[in-house]
Length: 191
Image (cartoon, rainbow, N blue to C red; front, side, top):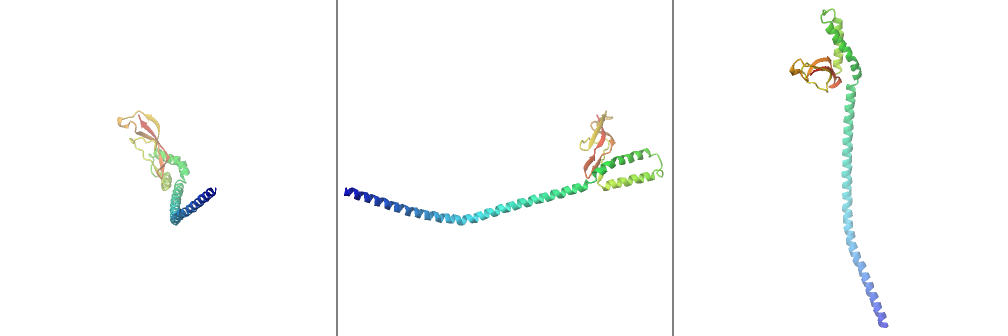
């Protein structure tokens, strides 16, 4: 029995020694691990700061670009608003200009002195309209029909073969305001 007790004590001592040895090995390994971790921690904050800096720069560049785009867009919108501010008034004056042109054709047989005042008023009105950026559309005969500029009122049999699908006559002049159509030219197309 004593032998059994001694054997058990020796077994317990061996186990304790092995347990004591394991923590020491563990500590060595952990020591190496902590030194590796400390190196990583030394590198990691620097890398983290670099990443944060690059992220902040990226956000700044994007924000600056967005601001520049907004500034350009609002400046363009203001310019367009200023240029077309009188569009409604001009569109309402276009029939008056048409009436002046019809009256000029009707009075073409009269002497200039008889219609001098009338011609003066017409020229002043045209000058004011031109200064506002309004230009009459040129739609001569044989011009190709363009639905972006012309409105086809009717089609007639083409007097000549070369006039098929082209403008034969202009019923009402079209006008542009700063290269934007404010009234389409009403035309007759050859069929």
